[in-house]
Amino acid sequence: MSKFIFVFILLIFIFINLSSCSPPGQDNITEEEAKRKMKERKEEELKKLRTNREVYYAEVEKRGKEEREKRAKNPYSPTIKIQD
Image (tube, rainbow, N blue to C red; front, side, top):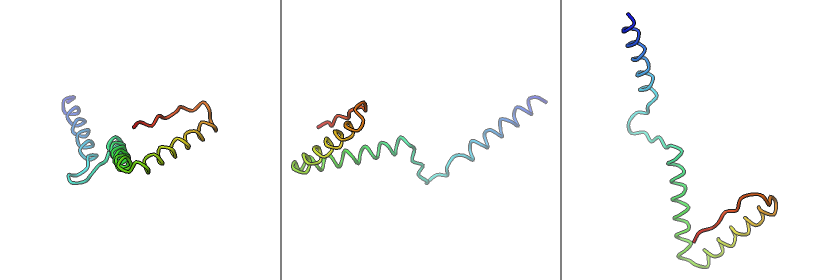
């Protein structure tokens, strides 16, 4: 009798697990994929900016100014380094 109860409970867990899966063809974007896509977009933007040096340097200067303003408000906040 305990075998039947075990199998019954096992089937219930399998059914619950299968019902929580998305049907094929639907995109389930995980948090990691979303972060990766955002990072890729930022890299593409920086790549475009690097082709136009004046715009790139203006953007770097703007980001640096924003970071200096943030540090002035909160001097103990971590600094973010901009990589070329």
